[in-house]
Amino acid sequence: MSGPSVSFSGVGLVVGRTEILRGVSFDVAAGSLHAVVGPNGGGKSSLIRALLGRAPHSGEIAVDWPGAPGVVAYVPQTLDFDRGLPMTVLDELAAMTTRRPAFLRPSARDRDLILSALARVGMAEKADRLVGALSGGERQRALMAQALIPDPELLVLDEPMAALDEAGAQAFETLIGELKARGATVIWIEHDLAAVRRLADRVTGLNRSLLFDGAPGEELRPERLFDLFSHHPRPAASDGDVIALRRAGGAS
Image 1: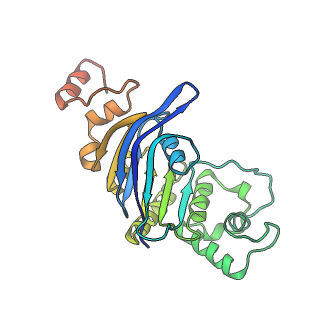
Image 2: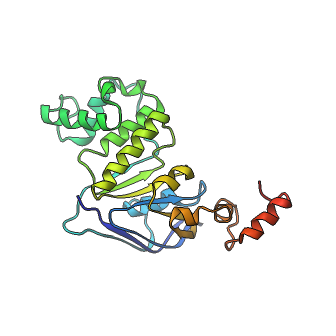
Image 3: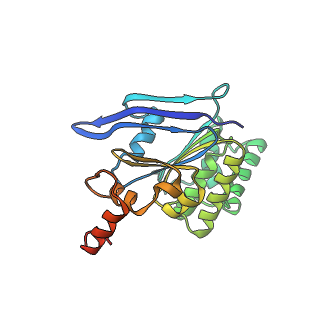
């Protein structure tokens, strides 16, 4: 497995009269785990939609494969579905990952692939459970399993840990570690900054425009985060500026 590099060059996105992204430029190294962090409404998911060809944008997004284009998988934060459908987890994953009609049982080979993917996310025992009976965290793990059939060379994750319990979070961390070790490229939108510090090779801060891009240990500092999550991003403050704001009651 060998994942691609991804380059965002001057990416802009406007919806109606609202500017969602403005001049966003950064690079994702091949085979790396690259996190994108920022506030709600800061354009993170819009950037992913642009990457996946689902949102018209200005600028350029280039995906550079080392050879022939490989498998791309996307895991959304949530996925709407009819909880009343009499479908098991196995049935749903078969419908999303095979060419057989949904009313037919998957082949033995497809069933083995699905069960193997569910086992990797700690859901093997839930294969015959109705999808409507899953918890939010179990639903998210099933979406992760779907992204593993087959293993992707480029995996795009939109806040996959939002609904996960501790066991699910541990399974997720193990999984993306395995994919990275195999050479996959992972682009990961995440709010859990502690997880980003532990796992990511590089982090980009996005609040409509790019505010920082670098190693998590260097970029996820108080002054950087203060600016990232403010309503009116400003030039990066010094440590002394942040201390002064705290003394004045401007930050906690």
